[in-house]
Structure formats: C-alpha cells, structure tokens
Length: 310
Length: 243
Image (cartoon, rainbow over all chains, first blue to last red; front, side, top):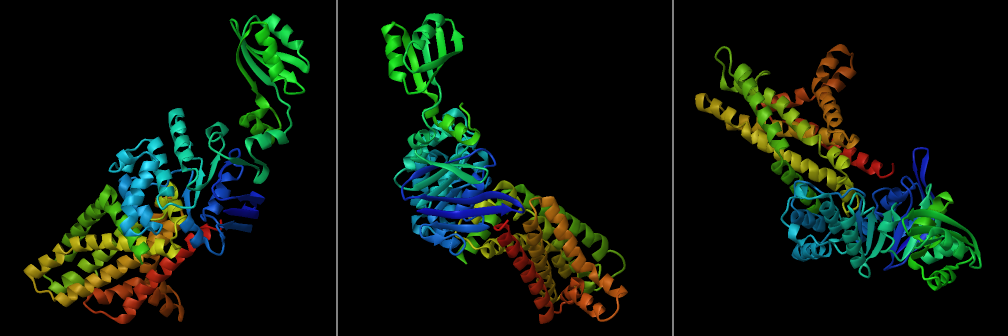
C-alpha cells in the first residue's frame, strides 16, 4: 500500500526527515511513534500529499506522490493534528462538502455521510453547528471527514491529541472499528493511546527510522533486560529476603510501601516471573501484579529514543 | 469546474452565515452614502451625468470603497484557512490549487456584487430627480465590478502570502493603492516610463467607465490584473507544498 524509499524533507537547512524507508501492506494498522519534533507530522504530510518531498520516492497504492498526487488524494483520507473543520457549517453540511470535494457522486453523498457519522458515532450531531461541538466531537468530525469517501488509506496524525481519558478510549474503539476496511497509519507520541490498536509500529527519532516491528519484535530486539515489577501484600523485609533466594535474582528494590502494600523492582538476568510468583504463593503472600517493564511499549519506546528504562 | 463551484458555494455560505461580511458591507455602504451626500450631490446644481461620473462623483467614490470592500472580503480567504488548518483539507483532497483560488475568487466577487447592488439606490435617486442614461449606469457598474474583481484577485494574492489576515489586508491594500495612484509617479518620471506607468494606473482605465464609455482595452486591463494576481496566488499555494 505504501512504499517509502529514502524520503528526505528539508525546511531550509533543517532536515525534518532523513532518508526514511519503510513499507506498509494493505489492511495493516500501523502506529507511527516518535517524540514531538521527531518528523512524524512531516512524514504524514508527505504521504497525505500536503507537502512534497525534497528527495526520495513515496509510492501510495502504485502512484508516486510527486508525479500523481491527484490520484493518491482520491485514495487517502487525512486527519491532520488539528481537525480541519469549518466552524460555521453543520456536521452534515461539512461532511457532504468534503464527500463532494473528494469525488463522491451526488446520489451517494447522503449514504456516505450517514455511514461516516455512524462509524464515528456522531449521527446525533448531524445538524449541530461545528462551532458548538466539544473538542472530542470536533476530533470525531475530523476523523469522519477523513473516511467519508471510503478511502483505501487513512492517515491519522495524533487523533487522540487533547482528548480526555474517556474520549481517548472512545476514539481508540472507533479506530479499532476501521480495521479490515482501511489501511491505517496512526501517529502518536503517547504510546498507551495507540498500543492496543496497532498491528505494527514504526519508531522515528530525529527524522530517522530507528526501529520497526510488532510490540514483541521490538521487545526482542532490545533484549530481555529491564526490571520485573511486583505488587504484593506482605511485610517488606521477609518478602525481599524470600525473593532474593530465587535463582537468577540479582537485586531487589522497594519502590513503594503503603502499609502492607509493596511495590518492588526485581533485577534479574532471565525472565524469572514464574519462579517469583511460585515463591510468593507458597509463602502465602497475596500477589496483586507481576509485569516485565521491558515488555511494555512505553519502556521499549524510551529505550529506543533515550536508551533507558521507564 | 464542479470543484470550483463547490468551493465557491461553501465560501459564499461562510460570508452569509458569519457577521464579518455583513459588517464590512454595512460600514462601507454607510461611508459610500456619506460620500455621495457630501461630495457627489453637494454644492452647486449639477447635471445628472456629473453627479455620477465626475472625479468626486458616485462612481469615483464607490470604486474606492468597493476596492476596500474587496480587500476586506478577500484578506481571510487563504490566510484564515492556513491559520485554522483547513487548508490541509483542500491540499489533501483531489483539488488543483487553481481551483481553490478560483473558487474563492468567485465567492468574493459574488458577495461584492451584493454590496454593489446595495449601492444602486444612489443612481436610482439621481434618476428620479434628474435624467440618467441606463447605459451610463450599466457602464459605471461594469467598471465597478472590474475594479472589484482586480482588487479581490490582489487580495487573494496578499492572503496567500501570509497567515495573518491583518498583514494580508495591509499588503493587498498597498498593492491596490499603488496601482491606483501610480499616475502620480508618472508625472515625475521621463519618457518612456511615463507612458508605461500611466498605462499601469487603474484610475485612467476606470475613468471612461464612470463616464459611460466601455473600451475593450480597459476591460482587458482589469482582466489582465485579475489574471496575473490569481495566477500569482496559485503559484504561492503550489510553492507552499515544497516548503
């Protein structure tokens, strides 16, 4: 669906993207991760034919962004970081305008608009003027405009930006619902917001691709290092002594103590989570949570971008 | 063409639904009425054609105020889209840059025509109390539409250059006034520049319309200014994709 080969984009002397190369196949939902200023938005703007590249090749659905941008624009839906909505229009009018702009035949406009409103759960806002909507609904209207013409590829730049936790969950569900029907490229700098949505991740830093793969693949590339986190109920001293006796454990750090509630970080060479749990259970200590920090996407991301654990 | 009309319809809708367009028209219509009362019909008894076509007559004042309306209407056209991010919607849609510019131009011209229509009561008053040729009035209004068209095109060019509507209004105002007033410059330079600069000055091209005369060369002049400014605005939009 997308082939990017040696893509570079300069703003004057400053290189926003340097020789970026990756591919995305049809039907994938790919997370595009990077800190602010990493080059995510610039890359997505090039893919969305908003900006032209300084050098390199970008092929979307068989068409080149510099030679056939018009053909690409017919096949994509692009949601910028700020939803591109006209405040004075009603939601229905706006979506009908966008549908016509993107070549939907007049006879189909009403159906396409209704479908987009249904997918983004804004059917009840059809007649509302956009200026009267909350930020969350404006974001949904922005998403609805990206998919109203049923594009093959959806490019979503920080679709969860500025939303409250409930709205983030709702937006995530909406994006999940798009899986299968569209190829989706979704960017974010907050990993938790898209970690449950994507099949695969591209990690970008300083305009360069520093890693790509599934969560498991990224974790494997970084090795198994990283502390094991344990939350349990018991007396701190005996619990730490007990865990130190488990084979492979190097060190234990008490991170938080709240009455009998303990949070511990166990430094171990191998993944000794089963042995730790077994030791605790046999000692009749209630285990609330066991997790490997290195396996969490936030930690992978921090390791990749800063070379340290969360 | 469908895309141009689609963009024009949305833009015209934006003028009609927000207060800014009405406020601009109301204020400038009031000023036009004041100027008509203070200069065009004031003083000693005049012929009807003088009230309309004299250097301080109705068409003279309305062309200047029409130019101001055109600049205020067009200052937001692209600058606001860049400021609010909606230009990315147009950029990422299968729309040519020339279609964006042309759609916005047509919408502004349509709204300007509402203003010009609203000024019609003044020549009507002259017709009631005097004798006015319909041809003179139509010729004058053709001149006003052409001046407005060129001013809007320059306004769109100014709006394409910046995110700030104020800067857009100032820069397009300077360009329009420079074109209007460059006949003054013609007086202080030698030939052949005198002829070139006089030819560029749009007052000289508007004056015949105000006197009821329609010459093709003057229509072509305003058409050319409009074309060049719209072309320049299109090139600015295209260039932004490379930045």
